[in-house]
Image 1 (spheres, one colour):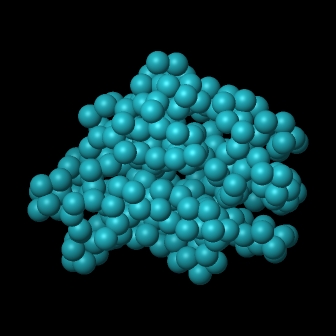
Image 2: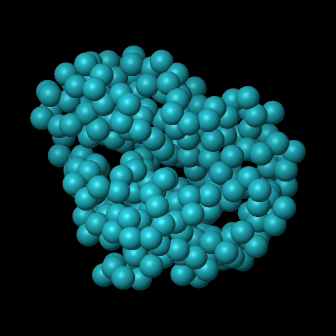
Length: 272
């Protein structure tokens, strides 16, 4: 049985907590610091950010203020599209903002055409230097993954993508599983837009859980790492309270069948 402390071993033997706090659109400053501190107080050991979010410094401050040691926390950040010309400088800036000597996981945020393969090779060098413990990608399709797999022998440990029952990317999940790449779900709660769906609400009632908790648990039962985002204290606590129930096979199939290719973010499939 998985629990709040469960970690997954990635393909380079680094271990990542199966659930984390997403911080997209959480404002730099008190809002972000409070959210991270609340998350750490409620058992989260995994914080996800990105250069473009503009809140790395608040996350660094919150970790320093918390009672949790840095080596107990898994931090992910991401290389933004305009920084492919100098990934080392971008990573150094993130390290400074996060007040850390290393990043646990550094991702290419989007599969920027023409430069992504060369950038991937540079990230491999940065990992060897110890500035990041693991490297991966975000928003990569099967096509993009195949391309970088052919360009180097360094396999991404993670592909972070939008993933929910309403965007059940089954082919991508199966491809990643076959290549020993873990899928990580952002926007698993559909930014709240599908939480009133009658079928989802009915399933949630069966377990005396909220629709959000069912969506998170669905990801976990597909062996997908999940990073629900919230800056609200009660929601942060609610989102990690998902380890005391199991969704039945029947209900998992019903949730799988909710797929309608519903995206709340950009679609990377059109990126050449």
